[in-house]
Length: 179
Image 1 (cartoon, helix red, strand yellow):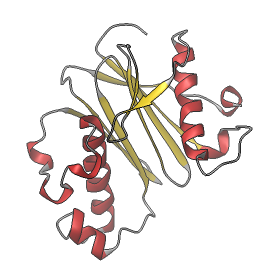
Image 2 (cartoon, helix red, strand yellow):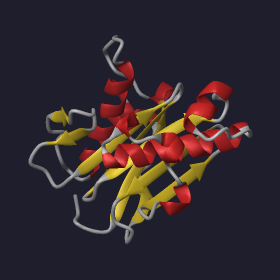
Image 3 (cartoon, one colour):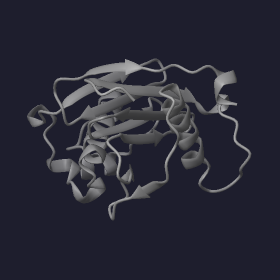
Image 4 (tube, one colour):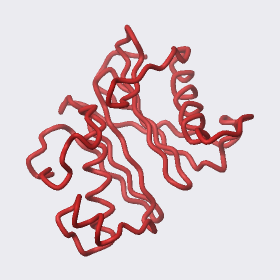
């Protein structure tokens, strides 16, 4: 992977990913398939993946950082030479009033709830803290790390990077490339 100021990401529909494996970890396997394809783009092999005590995946002894997320129908993956975090949610996801009150400061609008959720989740994944970060206390307007927010007709995605001098670039893969 080229050293530089680029954060590469890919968002893939799960129906386009074929894996010969059935398990309760299917989403993780699909996400790693996208991650492998992204690394292939740079002629890099997928090294062994480790996880921190809080569950953040990483490559040991590597200057490549990555993160992935999945929703019902999508896999989102990001790689960079900087720490990154990503989250994706479909806009038809129902975030209950109870969950909104607990994590999102009683946000009422369903689309705003999803936007707030993906931003907070991506930021917590960047920091590698998961739910140790109190989502309710997070103030998005005070976060200084670089963010890309994507809103499409059926999903929202957020990516955070700890370097504010980066560009985001999408790596698109068609179905035949993911088989």
